[in-house]
Image (cartoon, rainbow, N blue to C red; front, side):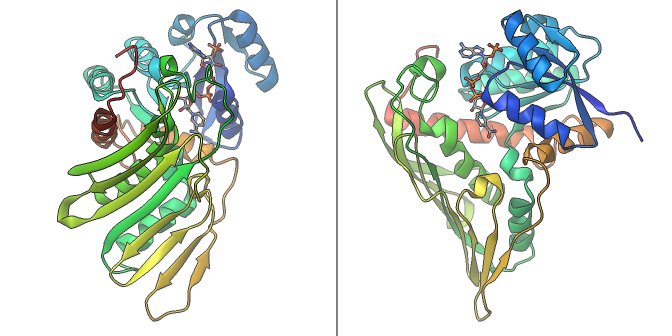
Length: 327
Ligand SMILES: NC(=O)c1ccc[n+]([C@@H]2O[C@H](COP(=O)([O-])OP(=O)(O)OC[C@H]3O[C@@H](n4cnc5c(N)ncnc54)[C@H](OP(=O)(O)O)[C@@H]3O)[C@@H](O)[C@H]2O)c1
């Protein structure tokens, strides 16, 4: 078997755990190192996942010669600095969503990777899941005629903990960057770059968006209607509406659930593509495939598209007057 991609995980929080489990479900990859701001946390994480190389700083992880690629899983405002640190040390990077808190920082990350000729990708894991790939395949094959409109949402009622990253402006809290980005990215995958947006949000006590609604317009009059929130539970569904039918991505579509094809004049067909692992393995395999092939970007989640998504998020926040303290 060919050599596995040797990952380093930068940070030891909630999603870093899921990623480590996801790597375990691949043939392509292994985790060989972890870096934390504190040695104790690196040791505890390393022990939990049997990771041999444990670093007490992100700098030491980035400099580890036995690491082939790094997964950045810090809170949103740190993504740019952490990803650039790794790229400057010659490491390809998979960076959690939102790629950056604004387009200026996203641009710096992309420029750094391109100048160094290194792989870089936003970790929009949903895009790689079999049911979402299936929906794309069906739309591309004309199964619902021409796709004209998308209705998609991702909102949940999180606990009132103003200091945590979901509500804390110092950690770029709010629904849009955390979960609204999923339906925004889904729409981008089908419709390309946005041409106009109208939106409203409720900025709560901490000053970040607790709930929001957006109508986004794309070329050819195609439209997405998106809702999101971290204090309001939404249906968490996606509907792809075409001239000759619809596709329904079931509840919690972003984690890879069944879809129903409702082609006009035919019986509805529910499709449940087989999934293995915890889902993160699909994006991990994509990174390993790209790096093995000498590619610096993924065709499924290209950097210009990531930049256009972050640019749209900037425009939406500008409409609300939401600027983070570190901007
Ligand atoms: N793809 C997904 O499904 C998914 C799901 C959840 C979150 N995410 C994304 O992943 C990122 C991290 O989210 P999370 O839920 O894993 O967060 P988390 O549990 O708070 O973990 C973040 C980690 O980042 C490090 N860190 C560095 N600076 C920090 C700071 N100032 N405050 C707090 N932590 C800091 C810490 O690790 P050390 O102490 O070890 O350095 C911490 O454990 C976010 O950007 C989020 O959007 C993605």
